Length: 516
Image 1 (spheres, rainbow, N blue to C red):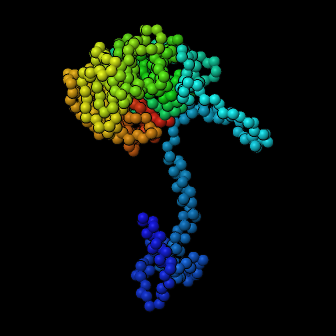
Image 2 (cartoon, rainbow, N blue to C red):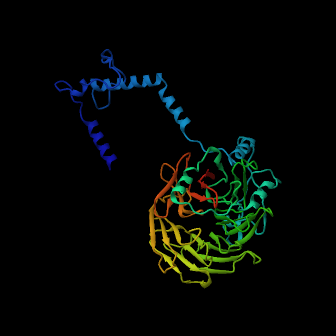
Image 3 (cartoon, rainbow, N blue to C red):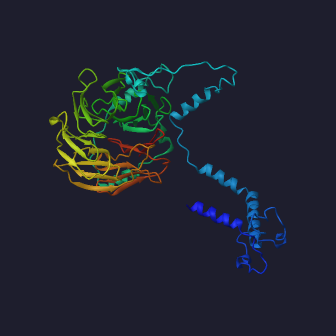
């Protein structure tokens, strides 16, 4: 409406006859001296090609003076090359993403590829071709591209064909935990430890090709070994400061769709379990150098957690509101039992660290805690309910040592902490922390994660500018914020189980490591 109104006014002005300037009092503004450069009256009478305008008379002396000042300013700025210097300064100060990791191998491949030419430029007639037949049985394209069942060899795709896994990788994974779990620090000591954790250029690397959906630390302490799963179904391993692969990065393709959940086995440190939207849950065994089947359905797996201390029993959740109890000792890749909990959706499961029969489930707008000993095929009764969410819940996790707290992340822009020490019918809400959860479609959903070393503190990424990673106490008080050398949002975050180290993953497949 505003644009139309302006157009009508301009049309009326064009139709008006020119107003004679004789007898009209001139504006006092014409007597004001110019602000920047001095005006020369010798050029005031000089006529230029811009002195006439359609529908108007001759420019006033004030307008001529203004145009001349603009012209002289432009000449002056061009003579000192200020505009060019400003653009060059922007290029120098604009942050560049880290070139470590998979970026090098990609550049090498691109240089070796010949230039592409069309058949028309090559004077070659095109051959008539028919469309490929549709897959039978109503399978979608993504299902038809699913990896075959059975063990898959651990062949890194970023190394030469036939290359074997580095022996150092097996030695590193076999180390396991060499340190006992430290006692919790008081908040003052904890804040001091957080401040000593820094990030440098060599602690950022491209580990996978697509957007990171999940990431995890290996429990070894002599070196930092991390894993990341991306949107394309790839799994990357990165040893900080490693010399194998490309800058210590090894890339594998065990899945075809987003890897939404992964975890290293605490009882078997050479094993990494990864779960994908394509319906497959696989175990990467570095000792056997294979990805073996653990559980498989048609599609739609979302999350899992270990239900036993030996990490052989799992609870697995899918997009359709069902959880499966899986025992890895049973031959095959099926479940022991299947239970429908929420007919709409299910986004996260978390097992109690001490009482393994309890597990929390993030359903539509409520978090329910179930007892696996009393599950039914449908309409299972929850032991405890965590209310107060108004939108969908991204995640829900028991506190890592006692399970007396549950940490939830909700799309209503709040992070909540509930008291689950008594397992009452309705768990009381302890704290609610406001946090921007508006990630959009190009970033992985934010999820607050506990620090395994500190029972009452958690970490979460931020999508607000400037980019930060924030560590909070369960009371809602901010303990520390990391913003140095961050050029993107780190949606996926995780603490090391024993060392002072924190990782963050972004949408371009890069892992950032903060450590002391």
